[in-house]
Image (cartoon, rainbow, N blue to C red; front, side):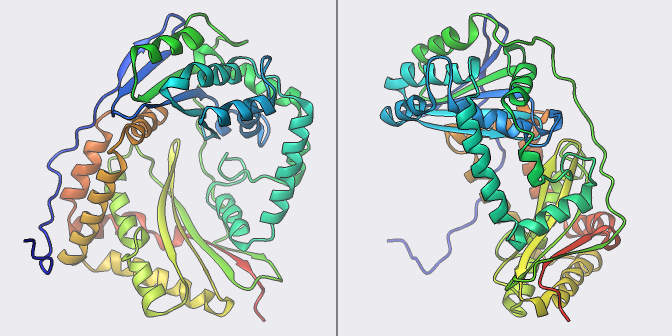
Amino acid sequence: MIDRTLQPPVCEPEDFVMQCPECRLLPNGIPLNILNIGDNEVVRVDVLMKGGRWHQRLPLQALFTNRMLREGTRSYTSAQIAESLDYYGAWLELSSAAEHGFLTLYSLNKYLPQTLAVLAGMVREPVFPEKELRTIVDNNVQQFKVNLSKVDFLAHRGLAEAIFGEHHPCGRIVREKDYACITREVLREFYDDYYHSGNCALYVSGRVTGDCVERIEALFGREPFGACRKPVERKDFIPFPMEEKRVFIEHSDALQSAVKMGMALPDRTHPDYHKLRVLVTLLGGYFGSRLMSNIREEKGYTYGISASLVSYPGVSSLIISTETANEYVEPLIHEVYHEIDRLREEPVSDEELAMVRNYMLGDLCRSYESAFTLADAWIFLHTSGLPSTFFEDTLRAIKTITAEDIRCLAGEYLCKENLKEVVSGKKMP
């Protein structure tokens, strides 16, 4: 019998080996990456197009171009697309990021011929119908107005602008008037420039059979498609933070204030990045973190506070986020700086470092254990331009980081003078 009064031993992973995708070059030059894993008769197809916020001429252009792909093609109306995917039990996700647009299809193997035909039509022959576009834009405007009533949304926008500046894609916040500039012609322009076979990559994961590969090649890989053939040039943007350290955004009806603090940090290619993730996790990246233990559990200023390292091309940002009663805003910010001072001046205990290490190792293992999460991992490396050793480097940094490393990193990067403070809520008397 198992003695359940005794904690089982903690086993750290010795190494981190992920199955590599098999890469094929289709006749029209599109790379097809295959991850044949699992016995369930389900498959996922990811279409990656290099073109996102970093490349758009107008705000929202990349987002709405991607969003409108499912609203009608030469062969299917928006209703037919929705009905067909629903009938065959498929699921479709569309998203747009900094440098890429994504279309992700989950389908049962036996219905892949039908669902893949719908996906191919969306990629190759969208029509951007005017009626559907106006409906979607109007709905988004209404949601935007609702979001403007939320202090968390206002503080998030304010912090992005404070950290990056208005000329950086991350700091160029959307205004209501920007929605009026979204037309069929604007979306068609972006689509013609970036959605073509010379700018495309494919991933297929799950129970990948020879028939799956053949059908993908037949629909995506035989002939070049799209109006453009020129490769996308990399665009680099430099953050220019605002001079003000504190930004206040008034919301007179707010019951609580949103508090966000942040600064720019090195990007994912920097040698210190992996250990910086450990530092940020220790500060506020899990339930037992310094910020949660102090500000939530001991002081009771908030229900939850977090710190995260958010990465973009060429830069990362430290984001500290919470909501609190108006009277606790100043003492809460004071405690954040107190915890930063502790990390800069006092070595982390072996017990706390072991807890953070175990949490991050467990999270790393859980994140890449299935066909689809492995596909996410390789797509992340692909779109970020990172080496295949990135996850091994992450594992090594978590296992080898020391208390002195953390103290030195905090001293170098957690510069309180650079930390922007954004508060959105009711103005205190």
